[in-house]
Image (tube, rainbow, N blue to C red; front, side):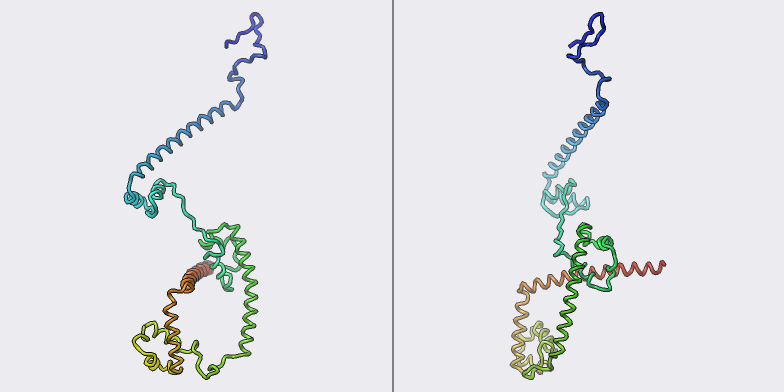
Length: 288
């Protein structure tokens, strides 16, 4: 549409019909919005190009065998384990790291913290929660705010349980003193569980001596065995044979071995933790 001035008066068009907006009548941020829109479109185009390149690379990698993918991973110093798609994702840099976070109450971090708190001579006492959290990688698996709550709860529980245990031990010791164990049983025999013969028999059964020797021959082979009657000793042979035979098959044994391994790792980390802080204190003394 062509806009015209009224002849002879030079008046603008009536308000009912407005002319196209010129650059002088545009909103002040019009040019900025237009520029941002242009930049946004260019970014979208660049993103689309990157996506297309990644799709092409993925298609090329899909055509390779697993062995060739592993060779490429080795060249880049990356892990070579996993399925084919995992290998491809690793090469494209989009692999999501797996996190096997263990629940706090079943974690090694809790066991280590408990060991440190129970040790009255540990360097952990008097340290701020932030220092404790930063002192070991196991602690850092948990957020600081949650770790602080764990420390408070564990310290409170240990204080309560320690008091109960000390009282129980006091009562047990007092009761034992009232009824001391006699040197021999009521039948006049030695106590098997504390006698040297028990440990010797474990070794002999483990070495298979009970197979090549009859009970009487095994009984005569050691003076410690002869502190017991042959009939009693024979019964201990059968008990020890059954114990060692069933031991590898018991679920309880498996759980105990796992618990021992778990505890050994915790103890090792506790010693390392204490050694680290002890060395730091020694260095500070020499610097001072």
